[in-house]
Length: 237
Image 1: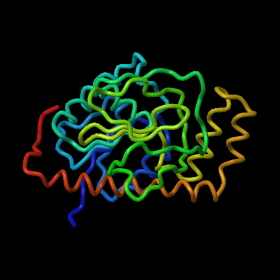
Image 2 (image 1 turned 90 degrees about the vertical axis):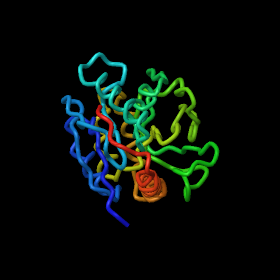
Image 3 (image 1 turned 60 degrees about the vertical axis):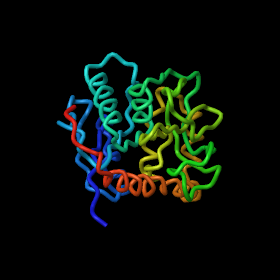
Image 4 (image 1 turned 120 degrees about the vertical axis):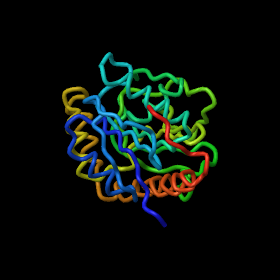
């Protein structure tokens, strides 16, 4: 099987874990672009695109966000396989015509998510599964034509439209990342909630959450199949 080539649209701010996590989980050569510095690929000619998490909100008035939305929308229109994770999930939703808004609560820590329907991205994963979550925004309106694929009491945790998938949770996280992310929320959430989350970051919970890492293998398999279709072609962004 040939080696895949993905564009990694890196939206994290000075997060040492993000690149490591995605390079570990994705069986592909990753070409990384620092999108919050305004760096975007010159084209959409990749086997797939992955949009990472970020501490930003997609509705903020920052110079790099609108060009990112436009690039993702163009890539989706070109038929690219796209995986958006957390902030990337929200970027994908907005780029395709959905809507993201702030939540009354903040979902942090290992939580249970439930599949909706039977999507190929979730093949081999239990109907209810554990994942690490960290978000204060949520998709409140799915893009036109999109299908809900995962949810919990906090709202939308997954959707699909054509060759594009959004995931609100973080299947790429390891224990070190989970600990650091939780610790970074003290100012926002307070010591009591953060300490409770930190106590629950255990090897047992991490091992359970590893089931969701199958998503990356499933996405790569789909991207390979899609990339070999004759109609895929390069389109200028």
